Amino acid sequence: MIHYFNMENSLNDTFPGQQEGEKILSVITPHQSAFVLEYFKLVCVSLLILVGFISLQKISPIFITVGILFSLFTLIIGFFLYRSLHAKRIAYLTDRRLVRFEPSNVFVVNSRSLTWDNTLKVKTFPTNLLWRLKNIGTVIVHSKTTSTSVNSPDQVLLSNDDIVLKNVYYYKDLGNYIDKILYLYEHNSKELENIHPFVNKPKGQRY
Image 1 (cartoon, rainbow, N blue to C red):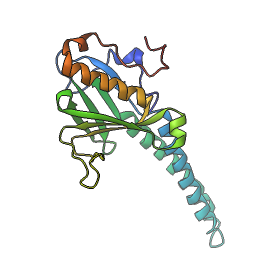
Image 2 (cartoon, rainbow, N blue to C red):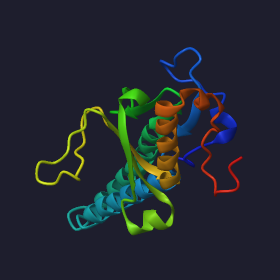
Image 3 (tube, rainbow, N blue to C red):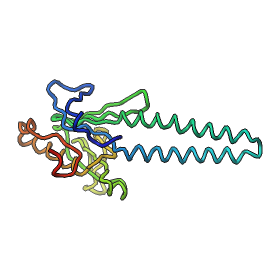
Image 4 (cartoon, rainbow, N blue to C red):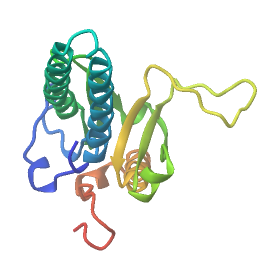
């Protein structure tokens, strides 16, 4: 999904359930690389389907035509399906909470909200080396209902109230930004009125 944050449009955005006077600080969408990877996997599946039908040509040559048509159909339908789901994965970081919208299918989009007074901590990590090099990773915002592992007290277990943001561009910087929000919310909430929105650009180019 695009670049994780579009500063030009975000400040004018609204979202379902937005509270009166609630200030949007960041609009978060998965990086475009996530969609490219998903579609690459779809292309591989389509090629396997095509090879499978071609292997049946000894039975009838019609299987080659059927395989080509079925593979193209899979690619086209899969493209629009992935693109639709990709566009609906979006989260809003505000001065009061984090709200995430996640589609369960093309027709249903589920929402989850976590207020800052119910937030415990933030964790960030890359899912693989390539994503790390591209500065793409996962941000987990843990709620205060999150528990720790019995075998390892340092290991934090996910709860149903936690919010997971995947394929985040500048994930470490976003995690630090959320940490800053939590600190201000606890120690000087009035300063949140003056906090700059988060922009997914290199440091020194964000304001």
